[in-house]
Image (cartoon, rainbow, N blue to C red; front, side, top):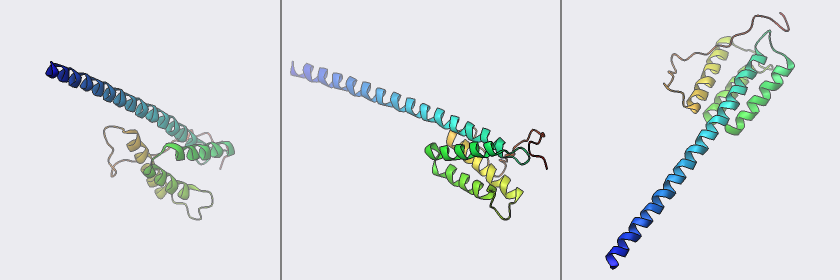
Length: 144
């Protein structure tokens, strides 16, 4: 009889451990999915805000939205994204005495590459070939 009781106790404790582990892993996946969804929303807001800063289409409200979106990324973005964002902001800030279009494009591509890495975009992008550019509508709001 004691062997049967021991077997039953082992089986019962194994089932409890398995159920607990399953619950923990399910909750972890749910938290990861929720965080990814939240990140995607912040990244979408950031990309949308970039349109308000494109030359000839920029507006004060566009710059404010861009600043808010950048600040919000501090909440959810990992260090590589924040470093790429800071480098891009340093290049594109109004007080930059010598802005360079080529450097702008390189830093923007690096930023988007880091964002895509953070989101787990598959297939992985190649650093050598990944290039991003922003499109303007062609209808200036501030004019040349």
